[in-house]
Image (cartoon, rainbow, N blue to C red; front, side, top):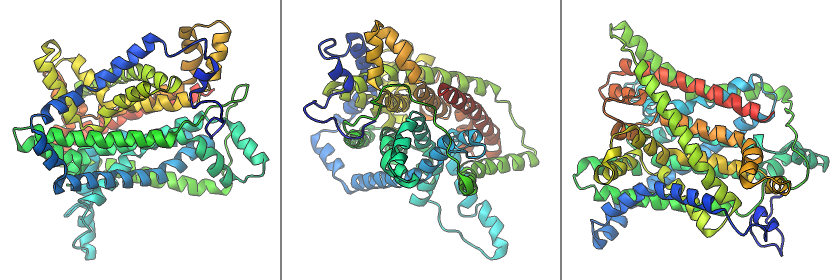
Length: 546
């Protein structure tokens, strides 16, 4: 494996294109066409925002962009994303290493447990945080007999950082796990044979080799933080999403909210360009011959107990704490005689649409990822960036844009299941794309060249060589889309067919009316269903390495 750009005189092109130049001049037309269609479909919300913003006029647009309010909202959002990303890196890197490369006790169980915080909606997690640690919350009630009359405020930046970190670090954790699974153990062995110790091997060899996974995970996490609405609203932190929501609610003229959303899109583009610059044109696949061997677990020895303590601490803060608060409200509600309604229809609906969204998103992301990685060019780069844009937009913006297009141009699809699945796909396709891109960057294109030289056509090479090697990324991408779809709220509220309810809608309906005990049962079922899905998906990820 190499970590430096290709040496002159080879031009900075992908290995695949350089090696087979003369036999294949560029990407297949069918691949370019499908990838372009996916990219264009992801741009529909952007078209809506542009149309709305142009209603303001040039002078008002410039005045709004450079206003003190806009600058403050931008700073708040950037600061929040930076803090959440840095803390998540400190959490995710050691946890991914422990659960993939070491003999950590019960590491299969920890792989599932440490991913589960991803299934808790941010509005539920933030409410648990506020109700436990906020003014007159549960914790203050426990401490009042000891003389504690007031706890430090959880509102604002501290609460937003806490809530978003503990419920979104699994984005980075899953990306790093997929990267570590694809890492060739020969790299580490070669470094150790040259005299490098374990720490120097990790910093000088392993961590640089994980750059695709790090960049993809950080990108997903940053975009998620920028687009989150539930947590920042409940802790009253004025980021872009909260400002956009207030603009939509406070005025019948949605042009101001559209302009705020466009600034958020511009910030997203800067993130994408920065990620591509950091990624560079390095190669991260194996360049030698032969197949990569399965990695041997590293023995932790005396470090296994501190490692276990780290896992327990993270799981306690991100999983046991919020679930404990939910159970508290359930017990309190049952104790006061409140009836618990059946939500099995909502469970079936949630699983059904999440499964469909995961499948459609992965199918749409495969051609985009393959085109961007195997045929790098200015155009393929823009196709990939276009596919990422929907992830930075709040769900309410995507939903309203599709309502606008559905009601005005394709009424036959308005308030149908197809429109709902399309909305989920626009929102979460970047999650699958990031995982697939990481996997493709770590698969040597020479394996595909060898298959072609043995007489396989493109389709058979893709089916027999590329996709089997890409299975960890496919499962990780499907897991992320499924888990985020099952808890998505704004898209579901605005695009679902009449009478179609999910667990997320039921939870939001109950909490918005302060019926916290009624919200407890669907919240616990949401965690349980998602936990089962993670167990199945991570089990497939493990078997894919055999």
